[in-house]
Length: 308
Image (cartoon, rainbow, N blue to C red; front, top):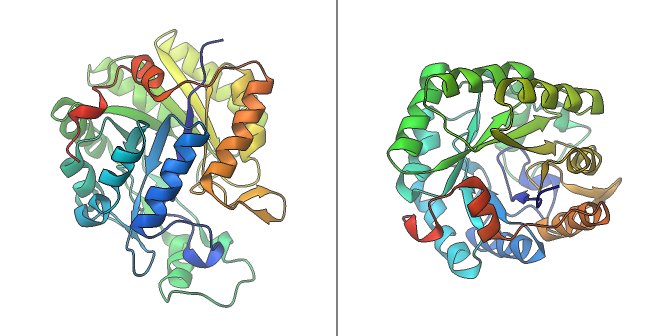
């Protein structure tokens, strides 16, 4: 098997500050945990921004630039910026930071979908910030919008114009067909890096049979011209990562996807999750890729070609 790329999604836009004291929200926390995750073995850092005062998801250029230079100076890991931002943002809001920063990689969600977060309300009755409970409760009427026109715009503006490569986030089988559509149009070139996103309510469930079907479909559509990675939101995070690694894929962990390191115990940091998944994949005989090896595998433009 080829070397395995570990990605770490450091903070995301789904979990809220009340859910874990270890979720990084300030620029200093995001930078510190990103560098720690890289030292633990993450070759790619998947990054969102947050308002440092409230912890609310943000795509403001200033909020990104408050931590991107520090991460760039503190590690040679690949910085992969979200274009998904948060489902409550407009496309232009989501793209503000990436357009300014011009990173080596961006994520790109391959379709419009329901994005239901309200089960996370649980039995919690106290919140650190007044936006958290309404944000989660109102997600029963939340649609993440990424139409074919939106996707084409991101491919052109971030890819063709700024040289970014993409982590194509596929939350369901239909998203693979949308990706094939854009590849057939010549807007996506190989090597294609697909992130199978499992376990979000609105997308495909985190079950072994579904992962097998996703890979079977991608094999049929893309042949040898793609690589895949696996993430599972929630408690199936490590189990699905192990299955993906056994199947020859890459893996993603991080506090964006799961706040826990094991049942009933919060992860103390992103690095703790990276260390755990590294141990899993190395026991399977996989060799963890360095950032520069990941750059070569994904044909990235290089860390000196960014704007931060």
